[in-house]
Image (cartoon, rainbow, N blue to C red; front, side):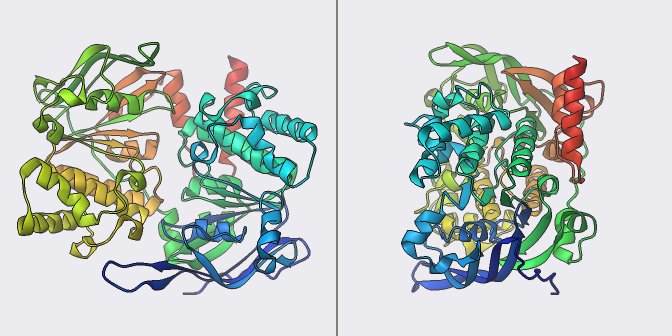
Length: 554
């Protein structure tokens, strides 16, 4: 297909990647190791002070290309061809010593999961200034002064003292901003942002996005911004590069890509619409009923659920929405018995559920299954897909041998993957495929209720759209009910029959989808709905201005 060719490098060009080729070695079971190409002769250039967004589905090569700007290949990935020119020098010829000097000084990296990127045993300030001290950019006093200025610029609370905290003592959104400060502290020329807001709720995401955009503008740093969220990339990028299967599909200005895509695949990405799901009328007795549940951590010292009551009807979907820390996942833990309630009760199919998971009979365990947000860590990497899906068949029904294999094949067909995937390992699957396997594993138990905890938040729009359609089709076929935990309001509109909005451990708005999404809204629900990014140039600035006007009015 025709592609938009990158422009030639100019004196203002900071990063110039030419004909990049990246490979990895895979080890198919029972076969000899073989090389696979992850990135096929991709070229790009980035000027100083500009932001290039890299978008595409899972496995497109976005993070692989981003990390190559640091001459880094993770998990055995090798850069086997091309040139990577940074500040006029080919970093692939810099040698080990030159690359060590480059990382943390000329180019820095902001990871998707800040919680996993920080050392829990060290204070934030020690980690933020580490690169500056290591590269001799500044003295300790100078580095700390710059760090505090960055904390303030990034709208972190108590900027003069927050550096004395440990990672677990700040929220996820705050930690993500501290990581941005850490990347900016050594005054690099280039920052690679790798899905920095994907795991954040919409209210936190808008603050972090605004802080990142302001920091890029004020410091003049250039950035590669990797994301699968087109509405997000439209707010921060000057240009967008669309990738698929490690190949360049299209490259152009942000407005052109969003409004006038030239390639069929790009058009499909920007045209993903919400699934039309007609809310089912509430009929009959609730299948799951949570009544006045209060739960706490720390021996009862910190109440995380406060008098929560919700119902789920057979074959219907209750969406639970709210910001990080609102109690969404904690509600799931209380229902599943992982966090026994202090007060209240949970009834399931007309019978009370034991508060503790260990006290529940196998039949209760079978009928209530869970699908987790991070499919990567929810599967044993040493087991094949067939073994992973087959385990519930053995555990709950005693099905083994040929019958087990037949049922695994049937489940793989139901999730639209097919028998050929049974012998693969999780590492050989894309993000969307891994999540489908987790869905099949839950379905293998023939449950009556599945709790879906942020199951599409880490997926690109096309894959997420496919997963949601799959879940709705399975719901109609199997008559299974869902408790769907999410911070994505588009997902809520696509899949929910009823909605519970949570804030600080309480349900602040609850009812049918049409009722909850129809004004007048309470203040928090209004904030949630107004924080959902739109694929519109300048939306972020309008949203922030609207917030400031509201704050001034109050």
